[in-house]
Length: 331
Ligand SMILES: C[S@@+](CC[C@H](N)C(=O)[O-])C[C@H]1O[C@@H](n2cnc3c(N)ncnc32)[C@H](O)[C@@H]1O
Image (cartoon, rainbow, N blue to C red; front, side, top):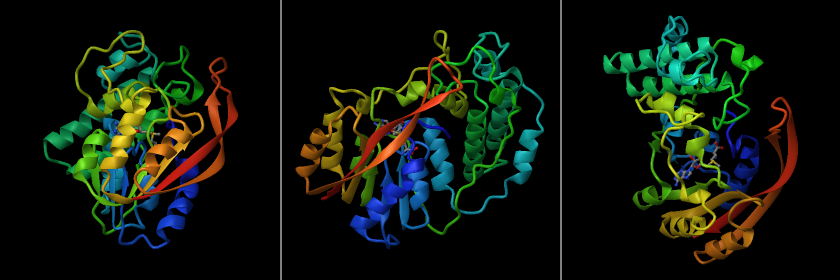
């Protein structure tokens, strides 16, 4: 998934940073990814550690992580995916409120894809309610739907707005592909809480922090993924069809450092790693000042090419260079 602040391309940098401090053998370590997003960082460490603890404030992220991190034993999913991909259209909430020719005229999905998403989402819930699938398969199927729907969404990048015309990639029929997770013997934990609440209830060895860097709220930018994941009833607001969304304190310039210091202070982890960049709401100095109070502090950096959607030309993207920091604290 193309996600704001995704660490997909920075995974090697983060891994090397962790190895350089903790050592190469992490097999007896508990690793917590407390702002997990797509789960890509936890996924990178899942086969190397004793346990992953994964958490995010957003429900769609919880669903992805219940699958990618929580699922660790083989699932026979193919017959279910085949059945989902063969369903007849349903004119449900996603079609009416978020698709081309639906009554709300919000073009987040083509007409056909909106109806297929409704059909798929309803069938998954029906299977769960009839006890035809267990929790593991439920989250696997939901994660597969979220990933596949995101691929054919008619947006420039996030769900803050849709494009007027249906773009080429959004015209393609949705194909529910498997959201493959890695199989291993270890049990992992997945939460859907505010990190400052969760931190008081957990402990471990390595805490990885990847908070939002700026004022863009994830709940607003990915509202439609929450709506597909929850499939609840509410009245969508305004032109973009927003739902009520979480407002993270990490997106607020004035209060971010208070929550951040509280998190560091409460953390029952020996090693803490924080990803942040030079354009974030907290300055390098502020972070250093806070972390230094609680133990031995270090910093590593890398230059990083980011691609931004060009707002005037949806097809084009341009690259900007930023410095990515990995702040390190040994408590
Ligand atoms: C930079 S993204 C993480 C990206 C992730 N590392 C990845 O590679 O996909 C920040 C994440 O923090 C989550 N978040 C924001 N405030 C939070 C809070 N108070 N507690 C837990 N998660 C929060 C957002 O929902 C978002 O998924």
